Length: 273
Length: 273
Image (cartoon, each protein chain N blue to C red):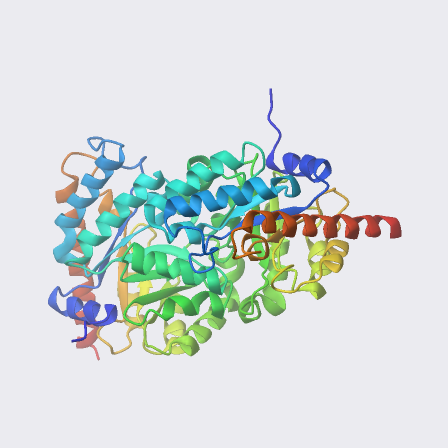
């Protein structure tokens, strides 16, 4: 008996939940609703409520390792427990952006996939092939390599040309069909170019909500005919949709809104083809 | 009363211990001496013995976060305890190669410097200025940005030109004088070029032992007149100097050998000036 790969599961959920939404889990102590205790247990309960409230609209959850690492070893225990709970119903993308030489990358891949149980991860390409391959060797998982990110600093090195080199290499390294790319939605001029260079593989697209990228353009330009052109990530606009006590309902409302926007944009896209 | 910065402490130790040696702590379960139990506690005892045996020859210890992360949350507790013990006598470089957008980088910096207590860290530059600045904002610590690394994959993106752009930018961002660079010793043709571009700042140089870089050339080309041109890192050649029961004595012997090599090479260098 074989189990579906992470990519297959995401495609099934994209169909079943009519969504491409990924909900980012960035528990920032300074932005938590006032009623949430600033303890590890309090943050855990908050995140569990958010997950329950939004899971019907999402095809993935993306915990950001930095925010758990900043809570100390206890935060890592929470992360481990949380991933185990979530992946019972929805795939988990470990947003850790690890990247190091071969034998160290192998340990990071082991940590993220086997110890913390992530279905997918984000990886930094600066150190090249031997830093990325140990992640890709986990064939049933998915590896999103940073291509062109949505932050201002992307223009320091990624632009004008480095991101193209990265995309070409990731395509070359994709022996098992489990590579993907992080592509910021604020880079709308480049999404189509990246798709042409990458061929079919999933994109993880941050920056649609708070950072102001256009959803419709991104979806159109990222289309690859696979049924899973990209995951649209939203973190803060869902997690902190309300600072009051009704934060879970507000998060559900924000997630549903984005899911509907994605669904409408995709329907318009296919109607126009 | 002001405390010495990490850079000042390293310079003092370089003088006092007549060394530039940094001992990397990469506890790989598959390479541990046979007599060491493969448990977190067993690994902890092993690392403490190595630290005690080598500290008189070293000016820094560099735990590699990947190997602790792969031991689960318990491994992170060990790492936290170990850093606290080591930094009482010797600065600790957290080799974590983190790198992410501004608000996430701020959390990683908090985790590494405040929660885990590192005196210095390694950082990946792919996401640019807003990914690096939150680390540099911790003025009393030291931030080694990946410049040109010693692994084969360095030729995928860093060469031929990207590493120069990174070095120039790091120099620009170095407002508080607490930036450094990771420069692989296997790149001997480029060490001098990087020094010319960087101006005075410490290099962290892996790849001298197991990876075959030349110590004498590296030290000559890295010289910046500061008394701390570079830290020479050795990990596996010290940690796994013996697989027998006398691993601590073997590690001390290997560390002393490197310390003497560094000392001789530097004396020859200054004699020839």
